[in-house]
Length: 160
Image (cartoon, rainbow, N blue to C red):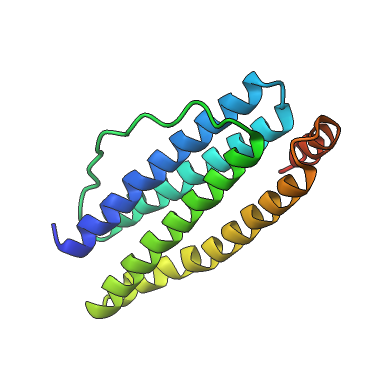
């Protein structure tokens, strides 16, 4: 397995781990009675699994075999909903960093197929970070006010 294929494989596993993290965040929200936040995070978890499967399929297209690694146990407690969404934002920044590193590696190796594949993920990460930045900003404005949280929970619960 070449270094670039190994890096794609690492990203596949990181996407699975991301899904696990968002599923745990969903559980946290659900346990606090915030079904809309839980729905939002479940949706996020499903997206991450879809990304993992994209990497899985692409690795096979490159005539290699994906290798699954152990997944670290995610956090179960976040202290506040604002902190939960700040943690999610920081996680998305890490995803962006990893995708950019992969893109740079593919550029150095002049692997145009992988560059093409990663292009969509570069764009998506810009959108993901913007979404979570906006949520964090709103959460900070709400200041953990239950009235505001319940309304925002309802809004995020409409994500489709």
